[in-house]
Length: 235
Image (cartoon, rainbow, N blue to C red; front, side, top):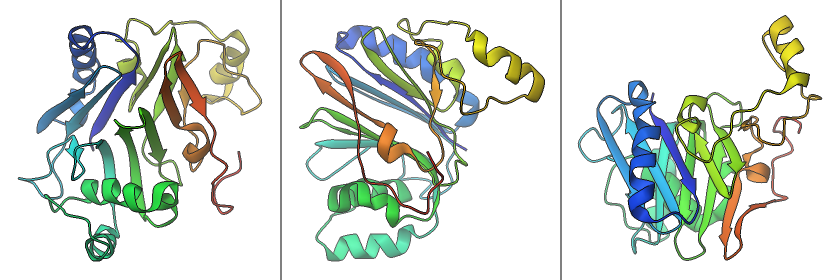
């Protein structure tokens, strides 16, 4: 088990640093072995690691060959070795033996179609510094958690909601419509609408539609992708 947390906004880097630290501190139990951060003018990506694969070389974040893309990842990719060989044959250079780096180069090679090739349980985000775009994905069966919110000009995400609470732009607001079904059934039916300020959990297999955020000169926008496997869960 590992954990990820981060956000996209235009706060100065020196302001982002302590915010990201507080967010990753909240999920330290998910990754006691190491911690890693990436921060620039528009994005902040944090990771807590429980070392499973490539114990010495799989520290995150991990970068592509020219440093233009960076990934943080929670999970395990079962067919990463096969995909790694395909990517090496396609000309990609690996610096680790981790499944994390396979996801990064796979996204470079296949884009969103990477999600049709991987087998495993995962949540990951990739920040493209050139496009100033954050791409995130959750596994098809929803094994690994991924919560996100868009509030006060900030797109934020985390493996656990309590990390979002540590961001100053996150506003806690009771969703009265959801309270009764949650107290009755310990779950919320899909017909209940989230409040305007509520955090959202990415549904299994739906992240290629709902899990993209793009930085623009006017702020954070949600980008919709039409690509999704028909075998995935219904929306």
